[in-house]
Image (spheres, rainbow, N blue to C red):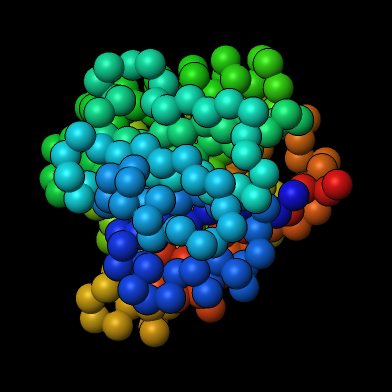
Length: 253
């Protein structure tokens, strides 16, 4: 099973940039989208003709946030949100049951400039970890998403100048992901590429992508017992169409 995760930074804009052709070339069994910025009906409209079953989750605020999971085979069941009222009005989390495992996609809240949203982000991290642990007690989990954090200094181009100043690289956010990993999950790409420097997001300012001044914000975490079934992982830096690039995980048949 090939699983792709991609923050598309607006799926309708992606549709105008040839998204359907890119999906065909990716040829994934399951694709997790973040930041769709569209209603559920608009997501389905953009993806019409793709051949994928579509499950989307929109924010109450139009044109903001939003996630989707699309798959060649329809999931057995789908849950939107984590049943925590504070977190469930921005379309940030979808869980799909594919029989042997849960596939989860998340668009984790950004802590905002000045880290003004950090307290809410910390509550999200805590509640999300508890939610994933409940899923993991039932069957293995593949957790995909824009987690809006660079976990280690190797995961961003300028760690010293950003530490505890820039959203996505505060100690509190780093600790949130560390706690999730300690709760029974593995950062699959970093596990397979312990020394590699590779980013999945670049600012749209100052030619950051061309100069590779980026951050690794997009992750595919797996339950510990699933890691042996991970055949390969990749960050698809050559795939354009968003300020993020897709990340890929392949599970052995």
